[in-house]
Image (cartoon, rainbow, N blue to C red; front, side, top):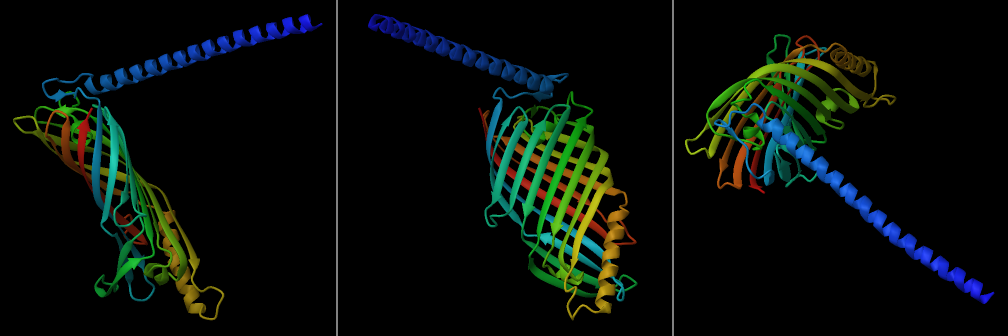
Length: 372
């Protein structure tokens, strides 16, 4: 009986050892296959990106850096402005303009052949932040820019029926916050000689002066929370936030100027766009509804303001959106690059006869990058 148990134990031990060896081999084989699949996928992506950058490219005007990666330290300054024209029952109308404080954000970024991410936080205001994703190709490209700030200043101007200013109030920092999302896509017609990505993302290098018309598509979204602000009190509202969503399509022109030694580049482009609001909304709650101070006159005033804003959000009007870009970069060495890119997006009043809005977002992005 003891011999039988001994033989069974030995058999189980050998089977366990064989199974362990098989598991190790299978695991190693699966890891090797996964690694090979990952390498194959990366090689495909690498080849696809290089094709997107070099397809139908004039090598005399555009060059691709040997180093595919660019890592950078960035410093971004920018601001946001939005305004509202509010019809008034007695003295004409009022215009409220909100301006963000100057945002100073330090960020880091990593880019591979025009694909990249950067994220930054404000140096002064810790709640202010920005996020950017880029995908710049030779013919097609897109960038996604998000900004959030929590400190706003407000100026309110009252005008009479002839639009003559009769009083003006400039207020300090408001208990408001603003969030702006700006998505820009482009198609370059002269991608053979003109490189938009050279100016915006340095995934390629412009070697000669060239310009091009391009087609652009922009999505612009902003949300302003002014709960507790002076404008909110003007509307007799305890809570108030206003959101706008617009899509714009247009044709623009850009030009790259290159220095004789090919190390400096200056870029400028402008794109007027036709903008169609797709969504406007507001939320407003009465400031003192249900207490003694809320009389019939206050109720009528609140109802009028509510009707003005409801009319604005229910009947959005087409308008014009302007996107302006400027950039400069300097190839200090073959692997060290420095530059500044700037973006300005602006739209005028969406309506002239009822509650209307206008806005402007701008940023200047300085960076020092290293290719590897």
